[in-house]
Length: 99
Image (tube, rainbow, N blue to C red; front, side):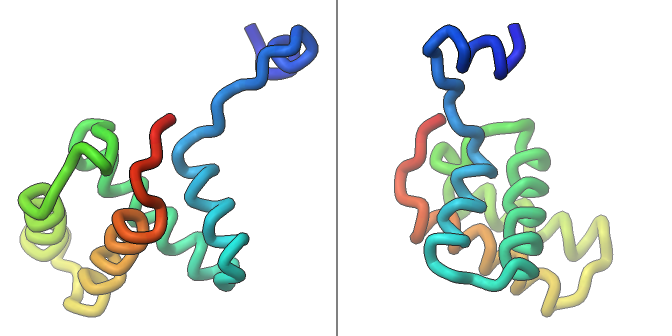
């Protein structure tokens, strides 16, 4: 079943999580580059934890992700801060989003 078929049948597909994040960025008039960067980090955070929903994760998971960036990926402190800012954006601005 394709998305087009379901729309034609009157069934609207649920918006995907990252689409909701992008829509929030656009509603708050963030720059396109900030939207892309933060969406990237939110996606990496989700994938790092086996596609768990960010609302189901807390400080322990954020710390594990950031530590992995520093230890395994050798990213700079500023990159870690950007990843943290993206996760905090999701946690504070998105509320309890369910998809």
